[in-house]
Length: 283
Image (cartoon, rainbow, N blue to C red; front, side, top):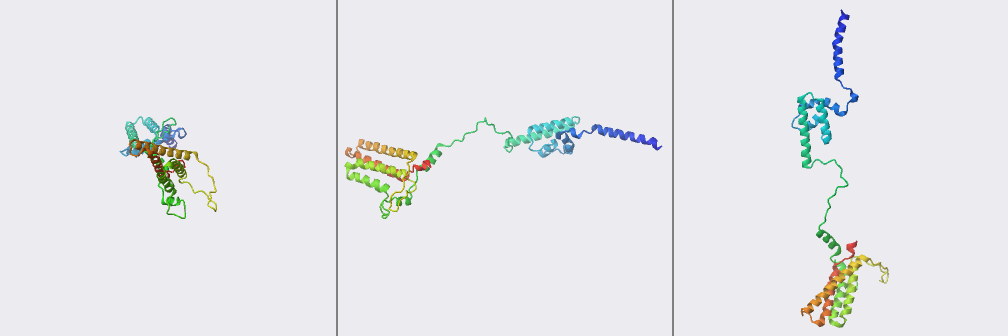
């Protein structure tokens, strides 16, 4: 009796084993995307308005690319092609994921993963002209400090004397009114002195020996010297034309044209020697 029942019991069990073996896929032949549906099947019925559930339904991460989203959706659609309900859930999950990525892209929270192309023209940052002019003005002009004015005294033992910029150029200008015949020579001295004051403005003091004599010779820098000459020429031309204009308007007598010219040029060069620092532009 036992021998008769044993084959009849093994026969249904064999069918179940064969049925399970027929529907069980080989583990080594499946890709990671094909193995996801088995793990994510419980989440198919939990799909709601939350975007994270849509990502988990498709088995992708929240930073997945568009290609990964579509690939996961197509694989799951092929896997559950015979289940219309699950296909509908997958379609809803795909739409919610794509809408979520689109909203993130519009809001700017999603950065593109494409690298910058070397052929793309980058925007050129243009500096306003007044900013450039302001930078050069801060380098070119410097307000004279009291220390600079006191150290400029020709005699250190007598600090009450005016600095040479004012004392020398201004004093010679006054002398040209006293001696009109020497106005041309005085103007030449004032021009050369102003050029020296401007060129050396802001430079360290020269080294001297124990007797007060200059102990070093510095080489001339072409660019600061060229700028000094240009500024001096500009003020000289202004004084020359201004004196011509005053004589033409009969404001200044014609005999005083040379003195007026020297006064205007010397006065403007005093201001230039006090405030202009040519080396600052090229430092």
